Length: 111
Image 1 (tube, rainbow, N blue to C red):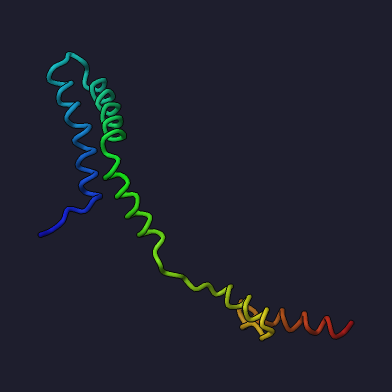
Image 2 (spheres, rainbow, N blue to C red):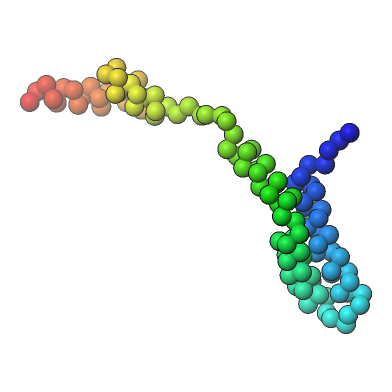
């Protein structure tokens, strides 16, 4: 059986928390449409904040886990820093192919 994703469930509940008060305000009051929409939005916000805590927390946890997964992304600059600290020659990079590093070495030997 297919399980409804928490994001979809939370979105539908939030829409219902807005649509039901809006429909009630439009049908049973003489307020203008935009006033009813603003009041329904405030009611929906309050209802969602008070009663939809569990679905909101579930969605937040899933988003956090998806964003901050167990994957580590290797960085090239970390490799070059490690090479410098280990005493190995860093890889030639950049448009000059590492010639700046050679010039710096020549400057130090001339002095």
